[in-house]
Length: 350
Ligand code: HSE
Image (cartoon, rainbow, N blue to C red):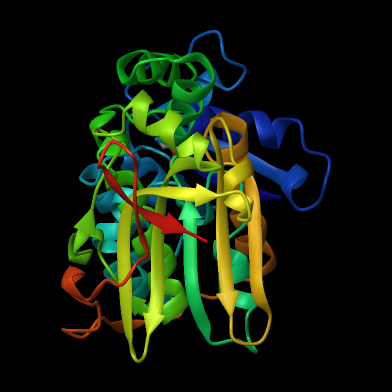
């Protein structure tokens, strides 16, 4: 039996409960959710009596070996994660804001304390991408990681194309479906994708990269239905693509709406689905595809990390800091540009 605590019982935390309670695979079926930390009460929930507002109770309970942080935000969530790691507890999170801002420190503390800080669910929802990046490309120098990493914008772009929805209508339905961030600006302006590509690029290039160091982040605010229709005439769709690519011993990293031609697998990525393409020097291109947001898919990724923490399959090893000049200035970007008949220019993804 492994005792865990879930911090934050919202969309993802609730999904983790659902996934664990329906799981019949070891070691997950032997996990006991001993505490749920939330400011709300859940009197009708089967685990309603395990809900607490007192984090110290969790911290001081030596029988709790894994803390699942699904709170969101980068304040209390960071403080609790740090305290848990220092207390010798493994931490599993879906919180990309904390991973982006404090990942370097939290991984160092995890390593010092012989525990793990795992964040598979912070990128790509249910798609296993961080564990494969960490362990399956041993023969490869990773040349490029690129992704459709934001379900909300992909959903909106899909529905602008198929139903002529406006941006606002798309945001509203993405919110209703639970895909969008609390503040959808982070989705629409490309910041959510930027955090995710920074995390992936950091693992691929073995450095800590914050999204704040990405020199070019453009969201979908200026993409119009006319652009989408004109792209279609060229056999393309418009997708918000995040790219991190090795250029010599440096990296090009950017987020922008791209024209995606029908020879790319990304052309077929619709609705709130995500895809990540990894190009290695030995393996060539590998594409991961799946649900990039939502309660159960994200919880499935959290559960994978819980399993890795229990089985000892994962190890947290602190990476190097990113040296100045490693990320190329946007002026060095040589992406192929395509001009639509209305004069608007888009990068081309292939
Ligand atoms: N708002 C995010 C998205 C949620 O739409 O992809 C998952 O990170």
